[in-house]
Image 1 (cartoon, rainbow, N blue to C red):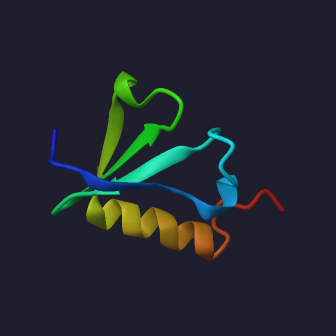
Image 2: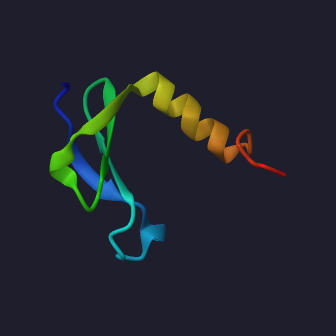
Length: 64
């Protein structure tokens, strides 16, 4: 696994702990469960993560 640091949660989670955390490494992005940080994480290459976030922003995954 890549070295991941700077873990943060979305400001939209409102501190309720029912969210995921995102951390960044040199060429990977990690995603883990806020409630169970020790259970592991999944990692994505930075380029794939950027494409995913771009898709979210442009509505590619909207159900409308």
